[in-house]
Amino acid sequence: MEQLSLFSQSGGCARPPETVTWNLWHGCTKVSSGCLHCYMFRRDAEIGADSTVVRKTQAFNLPVRVFRSGPYAGEYRIPAGSMVYTCFSSDFFHKDADIWRPEAWEMIRARPDCSFFMITKRPERIEACLPPDWNGGWPHVTVAVTCENQAAAEQRLPVYLSLPLPRAAVMVEPMLSRIDLRPFFREYRDPAGRPVIRQVSVGGESGPEARPCDFDWVLDLHAQCVENGAAFHYHQTGAKLIKDGKEYTIPRSLQHKQARRAHLEFGGGDPA
Image 1 (cartoon, helix red, strand yellow):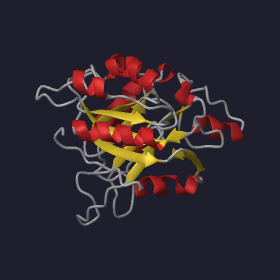
Image 2: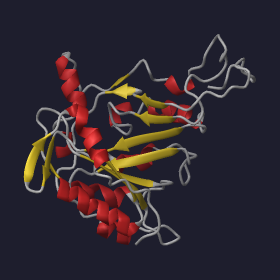
Image 3: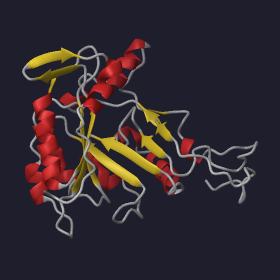
Image 4: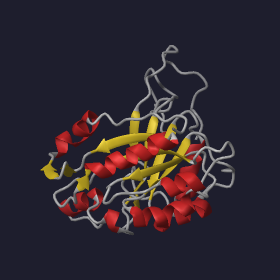
């Protein structure tokens, strides 16, 4: 998994970082209400594929592929500094991928020049699936957890926030209810006394059968993050948004744009 050449033929011109999706295996099994209308199941159904069969993909070795000829011969195809969204058509910690995961960790280890971001609904499997040299975590890897409602938060966060991770990121998507993270901000602290949760991302549900997301829930969670110095990102409105008591149907093409117009981005900082 090393570079084919010590020196590139590109004349020293660095390629700009990219945003890459690395779906190294595909397929999953539903574990909670947040999975009910999963986009991956919906897309597989359109082509008659069985989404419950977890299978290795042709993109498995994507992070360590290199150019074999041309001006970038010997360099990785994914340039240094890139963000690699990992395993978004499955769950990286799914038990049916156990046989491939050690090799996946080796590829991630070989690319400390990139950032890898993965999301799981299976925090109870994380610790047993970490590589032997994980220690307190690899700085270039973020393992996030999904909590679609209060019940999921109370089930998953005590496990997740106790793990040896360099940073904790909570994905509330699809957001199906109001969520109170204040008890977890209070209870789980790093050695400096700061809340362990450093990032929260929120999004409503998309698709033809989407369940509504109330904008008041989003505002409440935003306030919790500001109070505790955790970064907040409003990712998308979802297909159905309740605002000021009225339900709006929002086309897929506008869901990200409308979320940005809410101006709720918060970069984090000291607790208020």
